Image 1 (cartoon, rainbow, N blue to C red):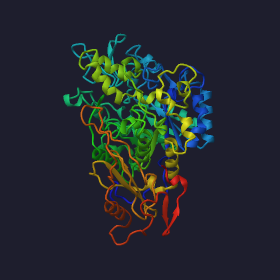
Image 2 (image 1 turned 180 degrees about the vertical axis):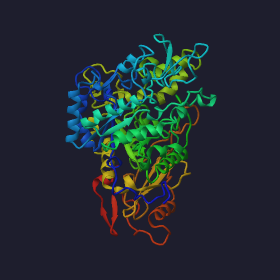
Image 3 (image 1 turned 45 degrees about the horizontal axis):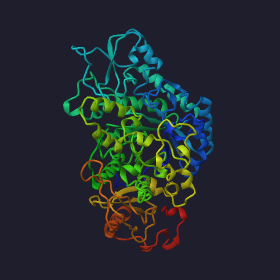
Image 4 (image 1 turned 90 degrees about the horizontal axis):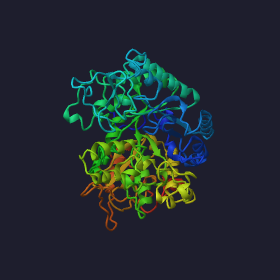
Length: 616
């Protein structure tokens, strides 16, 4: 059987690991819900909203770092892995939150940040105290270059060199991110033991797995040679492909993940498609799945927004599916804490199109052969914040770019700000919009980051009460995915890869009905699935307005009058027949017909589908 998207979709469907069938909801605790009025979200605030999450229908919460941290990078600089950040609460609050999730059938996955620690972690405090300290080799120290400068030309993702001079011992330490985030030395076996022990600590508490922050970076290149000029623009391609990465991950699987049946999802920035299957092929016993960033970064070159096309987007989805193959698995996401809001990024967030755009994009995201990861607020169609001045941003990455590019005169201030209005991570970090009340119901105090002023129109309270809202579209899609195995395990086939504006694809599973979806990303349109097919949630879908740049970065074409851009029906039928029946000798019974959304074909008879089958 050929690996890739053309297999029949049966492999592993009956004995599927629990995480393949799950829908994950990411919570950024600082911005989710503040229970004590200090302007910062906390664990008790999450506990107060568990009924909301249960109503949405999610299976797993991914909790961004909640550990003790000085917050140089909003919690991704960990000072104590076994302690809760004081701003978020106590360990008793964590236990109460976890118990509440389990009572509602929701699992918890937490961040594992072990490429680096905080420079205030006691390991590093000891490590920098002297060259002879037992913790010295927990981190990566080097003498400077002959001229006294950094040991090599590695750049930091947050600007400047990836090396920081430490006068106490007269050496440099390596930090791929902020200088307060020194990288751990995974060539030291003691580091492995420490990491595996802290993983067991949280698994024994009852968490179900880990999202692994920049996990592909933990293996460094032998000798740490200089990067070639062409590598300096994208150092992640080198950082992510160290020579021992697969040895480290296999050991982690053997020692911790497998004994606990734990889910693992790796942030695989810098891992190309040609290497991806080595991380996720179940026979290799490494990770459950990884995040591919080729969709969310399709319009990015570092901090700049660039042009893209719909066929490019479709090609990426097909490649991701094919890379997972028969023995692997992957993820589906359009937003997280490091990327701008989905509807502003890929759709049209103006009042006329925001809701329709958000629904179409949710349909695309939740109907892939992958585990979907939904980011907080995307179920409401939350949008980018209208940032104007550099002082409004909080992100350490933005501040580093400002110092490196603007203050040195390399890039005009307005040029950087123009691109950041589309690309900044702070867009997704603004507080959750719970109601139309002051501060969006997020806090009774002053929020740590400004609440989007459109919370008056876009908020959870209004949408939970509106059966046609973006929230209920997500809820029905999640429920539909749970009922239809083809949406989880079915083979994925792009019906018309070269069509300039329509993304139409089938999901088929042996022994089950086939399903089809069509989503336009360039014009208003409606279409139906072929006759005889069950209606998918986008049987009659109004797609989002385009986000194709046609001029300066960030500018967008807006459609004129509606026009039909549905893929030719014979193309859809051919793809369906090839997937379900092999040679064209027999077709499923005709029926359903155009103009009958919400009808399903079962045993040759039409009958109304349950309300949740029609998600719009």
